Image (cartoon, rainbow over all chains, first blue to last red; front, top):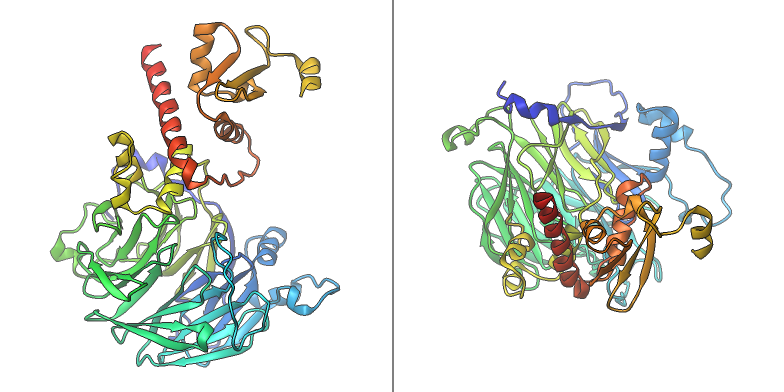
Length: 420
Length: 107
């Protein structure tokens, strides 16, 4: 097995395991349909959702789940966990207390996304009007993308079905909500399109984004909701303007299908993962490749990168400190990288990993596997430098082109545009 | 704050427990434990002024709060920085960083 040069191995620390959620044992273990294609955390950190396979999605209150891990050790079989959750005397309405739900979606679940009417950045107060939903209450929704192209929208607090969106003709591979609380949902499908839905308007479909020549694997909103990145088969990485719904540019560089994408918390960086064994970090404002994280040494040449090589990268996720990313690859490893170093800072073993997501506070990484289970690790934490905090604060409001005009020394300009 | 100084030792003398950081813009004074004040600026001024007072041109509170948490194991709170002040703060932090490198090279 190819591995990095030996002198770097001593710096590879093993990540601390926090817990596991194992799928309930099913009678036909080897049958298809058990896969956990997606995991997601609610934007306010209250819930964790995972597709358990066999057409069900399980919603667990996240803080109770963490407590369970601490009290009962790291292994936690989900069948009995619902009985062990402590029941407190309810003194208020039940909707104020998070409860566990198992949702039967009726078809294999390929994608999950939480949507909240509360903007992730509490920058402005926006008066939001409601049509069908409860008035005056913060809405938390779970969207599930299914094998037959339907999208079902569920209420997280009650577990009830709210909407059924029918338009895609093939598997809905990824879903993402706009982070500004507007409940705009974008779905990416194997039918080569992305669709934009307005959930405040009863799920009205606003726009179809066409341009992919092949399956669309994943999509992600930039934190200011102005840009959408969609990635797909045939090396496609597209950036869309979400005010006018036009394509901004295509990012070229990968040698195989691109299967995952994620923006950094300040929107200045875009990470994409591909079957060509690489994770690229791009500047989404001008399309430059800033960093490359390889999972195979030496890196495969384009001919070899275009085929199967057991090192496909399945998922990539940006941490909330804007400094670390996590990647899942077929070589049975989860890697944590710093964006300014070439080799991973921590690794953890994981077989058949398919998807990963950081928790809302960034302290835990959840990864879902082929047999329907989820594993959790503590993310590497360190105090971010003051310069990095300043950089994130500036880049949240300023694209690269404006940064270049700032009256600061050129070394700082390079730092601000992540080119060091 | 004054009461603590009397009990645990003041900031006079070369081996004092506390040092005082003064912002020259508006005269803000910050008294911190010496072991926390690891910034280069403090070390430079020890050599130059033989006092435990340091004048810093920029707002030291952000730097100080960061230094406190570097040495402790308490949970790190988020540090909100408004974009308007972020640019000045970045230039200041970069300046302090360069000073560290200068000291390391020339000592």
